[in-house]
Length: 168
Image (cartoon, rainbow, N blue to C red; front, top):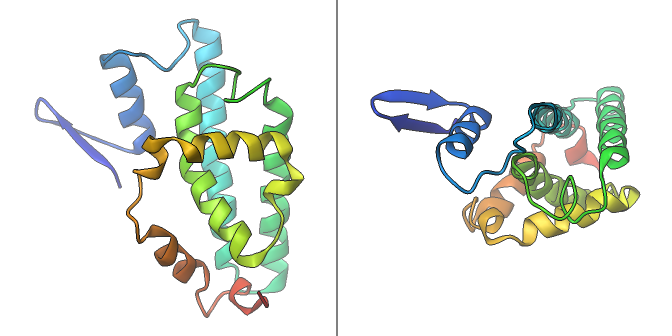
């Protein structure tokens, strides 16, 4: 769990910390207009749901749970795909806080997708392009240690999960 201490106050939860940093320091990555800012915050929160879908998919113990979790994730990714504008970021040319919230998902989803050759990102061309732009950013690349991919592959290959039994 990320933590940030400011003037003796301990902040926790990544979304809260990033929102505080965005409001406290320039440059700002949220729209100034309240309705647009709320829309971006809602889509950032939706990204957390997709991370939970991904976790449920690779931790499923049986084929039924795996299939249901994968279907939920694909359905939610389709909703995001429909929402994306002209790119390369969520709302177009300028990066926003909502983009940063999806970077951890895309790092993990790419590893999962490649490990099991599921073609998930290939089904969503706008998300795939967005994910590639975000993953190429030094801030995304430096957000995890060099050993992250191997560690994550080991985690998703948990011998007790259904997905670990899928032939690669």
